[in-house]
Length: 159
Image (cartoon, rainbow, N blue to C red; front, side, top):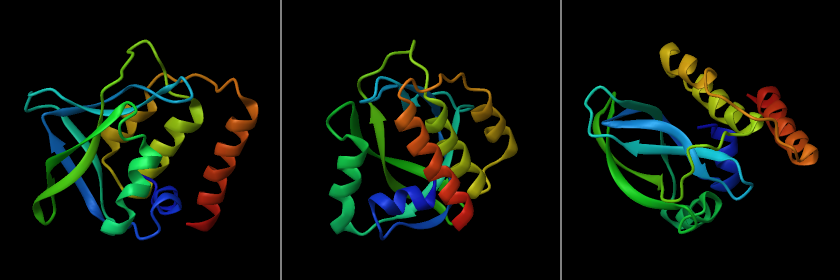
């Protein structure tokens, strides 16, 4: 959800506002390339389950860049969803996990990316608290951990 991080992948990314996706829940169980858990919007069919997020406009020509960065075809697939926004119902594209392992936990830096993006866009406090309550693990690759936390620091300095 971090605008700066998304713009590193797709420079045209423009935030349009927040939205909520009904009958889904955010689950951290997608098997990442680094062996840790990544986000998934899992369909539940339960009206009380809601995933909060950010709607972005991305140029069609950059769609392949995002698909590659997200790992389309390698544990994520694409679907369209109906998102409730301040502008009404929006049809949006999203990724969902196909390779999952519920025993995995996200690395500390990854969950911080998710949390900082949620804070940047003003998602509800209850949702921020949910994100803060997720169990994490410290990335054993100290260089990768340092590199990703430095991106977070750069993002804070430039916002």
